[in-house]
Image 1 (cartoon, rainbow, N blue to C red):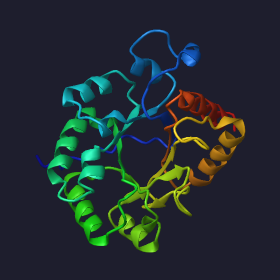
Image 2 (image 1 turned 90 degrees about the vertical axis):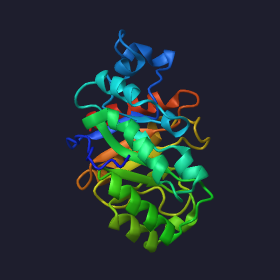
Image 3 (image 1 turned 45 degrees about the vertical axis):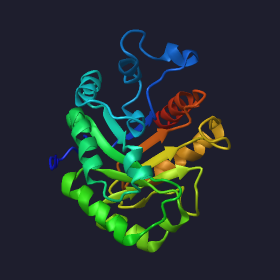
Length: 253
């Protein structure tokens, strides 16, 4: 199925802060609403989340519809593209897999925000392959798309130009895999930060000092971009603490 409808997700100028998933550790449960589903309670404090599980397995469209119905009107989901596209096919001949993913996430309706493509670390920048994939993707979807490349060959002027041509933003990732990887790149219509935890990836909590640095980095971007900041250091529950701390820091600015 070719999906040509736009799903832009309403951006209201605020920084959308959230986590890769909506698990609430017990030690932070008291700051969330006491009643409701895990997602509904999470949405009582945050205005965005990344659906990370879609990378590992497909979800029915009705599941996405149920998720969309359980959050406030101004809540937005980012959705991570399946590893079938990014890690097995390496963007090659991925049209069928992409159509299936788009058909599923269309269940989010107006609450669908950016699609995230986190690329395999082994996937180098191949201009013709990337152009072909992006052309195929844009024929099916004209909402926001962000790439998270993890091979050093992506951090070049040629890669930046191609992403910009197709209105694809490049994630600002921590820890950065190459010089420049910690700052947003590609298309400037969206700035998307994805923070995995450091020094121990997926585990380390950033803490007050680093949260201050992140807040200042976001402040440098907010004049020109809709902003997303997703914490992916979820393995030991640090993401929720960091997201709450950043939220408080920005509100108190």
